[in-house]
Image 1 (spheres, rainbow, N blue to C red):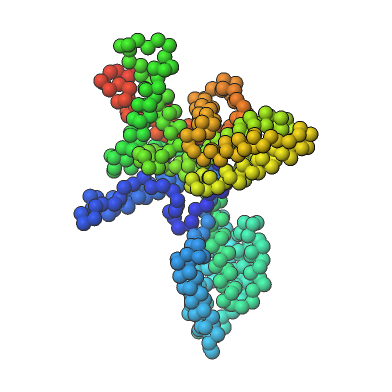
Image 2 (image 1 turned 60 degrees about the horizontal axis):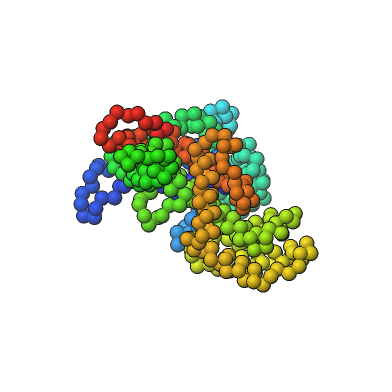
Length: 485
């Protein structure tokens, strides 16, 4: 997967979808005990976290930090500043008041201890000896506490434990002389080191999770299903809709369907159609299948990439048609044109108004590049009639039912479905113009989509099988079709 996924370090991934339906109607008593609801929530959280670690190689956790411009961020800053101002006031009094400083030293000791491994026997002994809280209390009582000496020891230990990426930040701590800023900096860097340790542990566990991921996720989802039998209702509706469409489309592909024959689609065909639906999901239609919720953000991202590729290929086709492909033979023209299309269409898929505006800018940029290419090639002027026609054709691409966009979309989905069905790359349909110009992007998208589908089918195949059997064998006939996995 592209991009790095970061989670707030508070024990619960913030943007992972939730499978549970824990809300009870207002005014009515809960249908389950608090402990059972907490157990279900923990099960869902563990399932989501394990799934994210397995499928996202860039998964990592970072310390939670609210947006600085948010109310939570402003309140947090005010509270933190008040705390450090209070510490400054205590240390500046005569004689100095070390009560808060001692508490902070205890927390520093605890954080450092959490970073030590079982083999760090000598370091743990040093930590206990230098940050001996009873001895520190005695030093406070006799006015002999040396915060700089203790901070120096802490920084040296941090330097021996931190990842190389933290070396500059640890070195910068040595330049801080004011006690409050020094303690504040130590806490900040220790927080980063703690997240580094968590991420190191995650990456270390990842190979083991990969080996057991299928059985683990299947077992966890079964626990959710045992507690909430309705946790597959949306999934069943998703498969039913795909089965209906596949059955309706099947006669057109049969050589000689008799008037009394009843052709049944295969389980694999139903699943493939259902998976393809996820790439053009209508959020205002049926509810998202529960079995796919953990991958919804990834599938939504692929859906957006798909929309952009369809638009890009549509613009390429229209441009080539109006300039009769002359400029497309020029070295570098197609690459530059693709970069322009991608840059101007980026982020325009979410709102119709944004797409219209982006297409208006794009049509002028395309015309300019075509004119420049024709001039370089000595091909003469770009006819005004062709220019006006190209302007209108590109502008009309905002419509979902635009003929060119629909044609390209159908061909792209056919290619992705062929990739989903597997088999040798040689057996896949040859990409017609202009899809060949975006073949690398299409293949990358299809590979990412296929990876999600394969893992999901492997995990949830046993849950899909009984639903598909009811669809394919409604009268209770003995199972003869292929399995859903």
